[in-house]
Amino acid sequence: MDINLLAVPIMYGCDRNGAQYGPDTLRKKGIVDVIKNQNHNIYDFGNLFIPNVSESKKFVDHNNVKYLKTIVEMNNNLAHLVYSSLASESFPFIIGGDHSLGLGSISGASKYNSDLAVIWIDAHADINTHITSPSGNAHGMPLAAALGVGEPSLINVYYNKPKVKPENVYIIGARDLDKGEIELAKKLNLNLYTMEIVKKIGLENVIKEVLNKIKSSGIETVHLSFDIDVLDKSIVPGTGTPVNGGFNLEEGKKILKGFLSTSLVKSMDFVELNPFLDKDDITANLCIELVDWIFKVLK
Image (cartoon, rainbow, N blue to C red; front, side, top):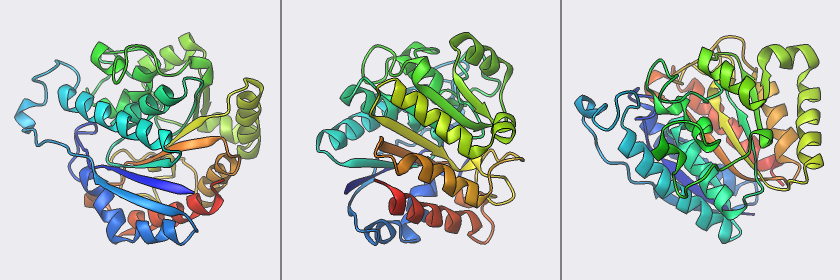
């Protein structure tokens, strides 16, 4: 398979220094060779340009969305890279950087194929808006914007309409939800599999149920967005918003294999490594192990 490595060195969505160095850290750890060694052709497109913005100007563009103009610009540029990658029959693998980039990935994928499902594997639902967000951090808003809810310039990234239908969104592993997110999930009747639900019905059953729903809907194209904080905080110290009660490494591999081995996933995010917070490269090394696994099971 032809893999396009699209790196987005951004921290403005999480407003925590260090996330912008995730892509280069993964390169130093040999991500290109790791993917190549799984018999894929890989093309490293380098780092997407992210301008320097002074911290003192984080609220210049909006009262409750930090660095809004830069976030929108980044997502527009990424969306076109993802669209172009898919149009060339390649697999775009987007590495971050923080999860605000998920909006651009979904926008590019849905422009290429509007009949799209999104599997969002994350400790957080990322369905806050400029109204509900307690922090103003855009990495908590990308999925809401992709659904057509939130700040207009985010909603209209790349093209002016929602990127994915609520019934085609599957959130797995969430365990740190804000009040506004809970309300929006209920309003839109999202397929929300919190860790509580995963433990109740079992991870294998969650994977089967999601795949059955996708297949019964007739959708054949999935964008998978994987935030490493879906794993338990004990094994990923190098991420900005770690949460207790997450998946262990084997469960993380199981969920990735469950979806990536189906030939449904046509694009993927891998985000939120923060080398500044890491301890003895524990998280960076685990990320490389996961990347190796991803491209071993990808069909």
